[in-house]
Length: 308
Ligand code: MEV
Image (tube, rainbow, N blue to C red; front, side):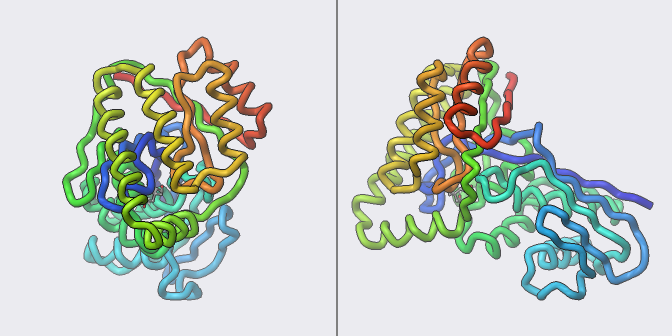
């Protein structure tokens, strides 16, 4: 029998990095990009095929701390079963190392397919808990925002230490996500910020507080449907992300191109040092913004919309 599980991508609208230090963030799901996990049940040991990372091996060949092995083990423990046999195939549209939650989406899809094999439907909070444990292997000190938004598949306001709040948008919202084509590891970007923060805590904590303030402000604009003001909030956030040194010229070029082409606002999204920028624009301007992004070096451009 074949079982299937899937998970969406994500982008952080506001609050990245500061969220690692306890400040709030706003993140949204990107449902147009999906990771799929397919389990064709058979004999043990489970064989894992994941072309995106060049993997095709029995689970027993993976080191015990391998994120995929940990994810399967933790999920099986939660479900009170042994890891299944057969073949687990993982495919994904989500670009890797680009700030769109590819790792968390792989884990979420695996948890869902194993739960389906066990005839269970795990609540989003439980899926998020397992995926967070796997994220700790990838990133060291994840805030928990990625696993939360991907497991809930809803826009969220994420305040570390509190229950995530799902958000309803007050007006249609259209975003372009432009991949700079520069791969960047979250662990490296987060580690760099930590070093600079340790060297100058007062300055960095002040910057994190301002970023958190923008997340709070942006949440209000998103809920009331004030898209122009949300765009301005994104612009201000990009400047603060520049102050903590996570932007690079390739990202700045894309942000500037989107603004020049008429976007309400644009910023890098996620850990930075590569990965994506996001731009908020009215539908009639989206083609011009997309062209400007491609002409300014975007390796790919994706669109995502949120409706009230
Ligand atoms: C990565 O998607 C977002 C960061 O804030 C890290 C985290 O929240 O764990 C940079």
